[in-house]
Length: 248
Length: 121
Image (cartoon, chains in turn brown, blue):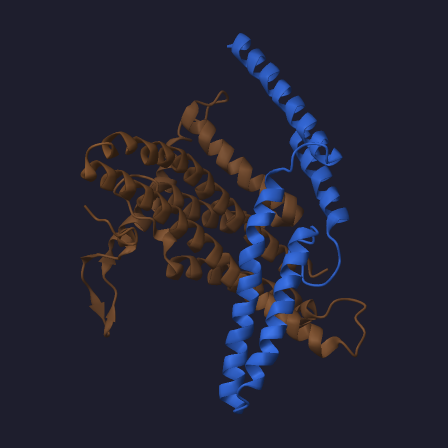
């Protein structure tokens, strides 16, 4: 029995590979990413096969997810956001599937690695910045100069704004990663309590139920967090895109 | 079939009414803080730390580049703090991380109206 609560995050290569001196093994993390993509694709395609007016359960789920993201995009980006719906939806689905599949026993939560969330966040950040530069050209950089700013303060404020802008991908990635690591570690720690109590026998056998009950509640909380974090990731993607598109 | 779709129409109408009531409750501010408020609170911590991290990182590299140790890092820690609090201020006052100081609330109301129009047609 693994008692180290952090052991669940260790990357294990399934198919070792190496290209040009770099380790590019197919790991269990890659495997669960593939599962996430497959699960999302299957959910979206299979459930919509019947296309009935009165949806069955699966179709209902798909429509709910679609309308949820579509509403979010519409609310923050307006009519023009339609172009970016596919991007936001993909980001939302991969994060949601990563978090949710991670809740299955014996699975691996790939969103608990900063390299994964960091890559996603950088992708969002660079996309938003590029869209801004493409749409507005060099005018995009007036983003760092708030309107009506006294010229004396400009050097200081511009510096602060640039740091604030650069902190976006970091806070975006750290938030998701930290939430996932903290949640899964906590569950493992409480599960460990149960195991230790049972091992100690005697009164511990009865007491072991308590961490188990708490873990059951935590499991529900974790599912909520898994969803909220995917939601936050997607809504922030929308907001960054909004900045790039509108440029106030 | 007709029965079923009538029933569905009735259920949709009921749900929409409930949704409208909920939305109205949120606007009063009388209802308990909504999901938005909670996710805002959750965001605040990482926002501060992330900006501070960027500040320290920039300060460190400025020091290495210009050989100004330790003044670069001192200066950029303060810039990082300022940016962090700016991040929090923006997310809490509903400026949605918008760089610059324009509140986005009037626009938001517009887009909300648009959503409702979009739903009715």
